[in-house]
Image: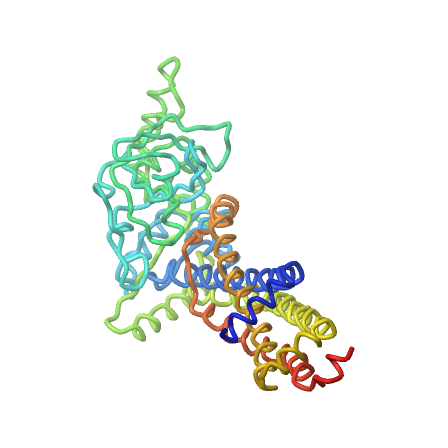
Length: 453
């Protein structure tokens, strides 16, 4: 009979205490696996999302809020910027291309975030060396929409489906206009999976998405350092057309406000601009981005934010500390479990003295008895650890849709982290240390004394 079989039979004889002790190890390992997986998935997602852009440019305010709202769509948007700001940025000497982004509205079904943007958003890389794969087509017409894979799955939408937008998350105000799904994105593992992309022209046509004339004139005059007369002169043709349309609408009974007719660039506003700088090398683009950031910081127009830098700081200062706390707690749980294994095996030595003496009398060497006790400790830890790994992945599988629904973070339920591979070796080392003293007790058992008692 092998040492492994003898150790296994010994554990079965003490089935209840062995099971409880092994389960305590499983809980600690399961928690550790969950922390490792969730941290690695969240870190990868935050590092990947937005890494395809050199800067996110938006209104003055919190850089973290700007990134979380526009790139990850899990925070409220800052104030909007005028369309003229985007056009000037697009023509900046250091900018290769700029993509306007509007956020705030949600879908009428599923409450998924809406991004009003230009067709280029879905053409250019969303991350380094990663482009969108679209079944169907991209944004081409005013009322076109492209949906993420999670939206398609949960709402059971497909090409040809139509939907309405809820204004700024307000359930009481649903826009009458309908967008039509013309494309479905392949899964990306980023917030794009749970986002609906609408053509920015259609987004501007919706009720209350146009800035009132008087407010638009005052804002542009303040932001660009011009007088009200200068602004009105710049947009005189647009204003003449708008005023003519308003007069015509007032002459008709039962006209609707959302039918606002021509929309001047003066009335258009955006939440942010995703910018890619000129330059063949990464260092050239990084230098160009720093120059643009400096120019923006010196004025009152907006701010330029490096997504990777902001999220790295957030992960380091917030998520990293939380991860460390959880890892320390789970480590303590595993240590306590090891102590439990030690107490369980050590206490059993008094009951097993006669059993050990019989084994010695039948020819078993001291080293064999020591090895059996040590192997029992290793089996308890390893079996508990393996079950803990399975349990941890099961909890991640169950928790991933809950986390997605509550926070918008996409967690791959089948995620695996290479760090998990260190769990079993650590448990074997701990089991060896835990089983050392009980093994030595068994090793030193006096055969004659044990048999006589």
